[in-house]
Length: 163
Figure: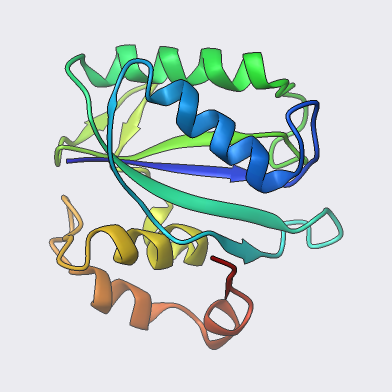
């Protein structure tokens, strides 16, 4: 299965953060089959907590193309949604990351799979557990429960399921 993380911490012409995520999911559904959507989660902005809070989800999809083509499509959606890439980790209308693409391991200038920091991020692990409670990291082979338990106490406290 393929897992995508979608986050938003700005309002846009599409609406609030949840509206932005729903619009992204709708646009992704034009070229991929949406199999499952996690609960929505709110977390502080990382690494700059002075920025607006994020809302994040994980979606599980089926996709016929290769991971590089998927990444190009996701980048087009981000651009269409109004994301402007300026400073790394700055506030954004939407951020779409490929977390896992059928267990592939890829490391190059354009794409790293699985997502290199996903095992440290509560806003990825908690929603990923919603849609795939038996998921295992393609490299470390650690299961989702092990990875979530390895998160810091603050990572457990600062995440809130909102729906």
